Image (cartoon, rainbow, N blue to C red; front, side):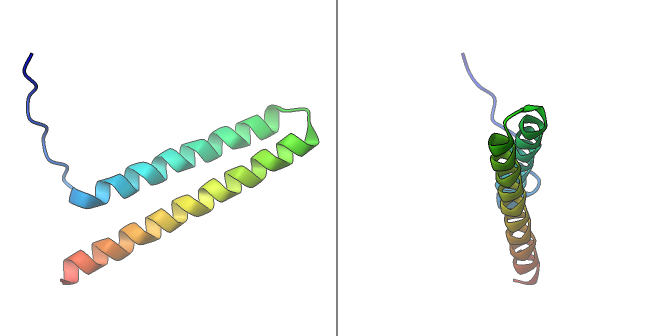
Length: 75
């Protein structure tokens, strides 16, 4: 079976940053949901901390993306 060539992504090399940031934000939402659903206070606190860490990481990726985007436009 032959596979058709994939259409190039419009955003070029920046797309992986955006996809990863979105995936990390989704993990943060999942961790928040688990924190809300659990009866164990320790686990709930750990999951909220994890959600916070995920959101921080997503923001870092977003800033890297913007920096790369700015650099590619000027250079």
